Amino acid sequence: MSGNADLLRLASDLEARRSALLVSGDADALAGLLSEELYYAHSTGLLDSKKSFIEKFRDGTFVFRSVDARVESAQELGEHAFQAGGVLKLLVLVDGIPRPIVAGYLVVWRQEEGAWRLIGHQATTAPIEPDNATT
Image 1: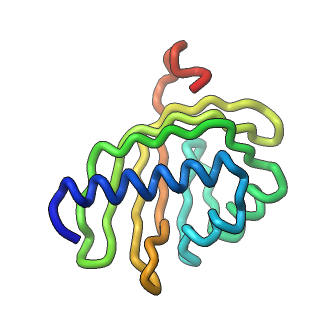
Image 2: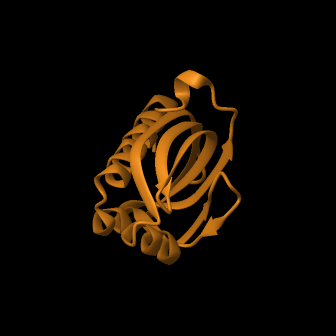
Image 3: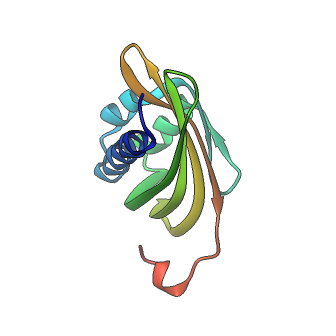
């Protein structure tokens, strides 16, 4: 990896791809972006592994209507991994109940077998302003 601008671009591209897959409902493609070692901490404090997250995605527990992941920073973690953080705005149905979320978030991406995979996700809910409630 080289240069902060390149790393920010890579992080933004990966997050845009992940966001699009969440909204599209393509569980197989999304699973390909996730590490087998995934640690996924939701803004509610609930935790998921890759297996449990994909199961909930497939069975409709989570239905993403919109996802806007804005990457604001990125730092290398050695040659083959990096962390990125920013603001996450989304509308997700959880068990059929709409949940607008605005959160600060941190992700960790690692190269595995020549592909970038998400290995860590942590979100912390921020106060929702009226303009952000339907984003």
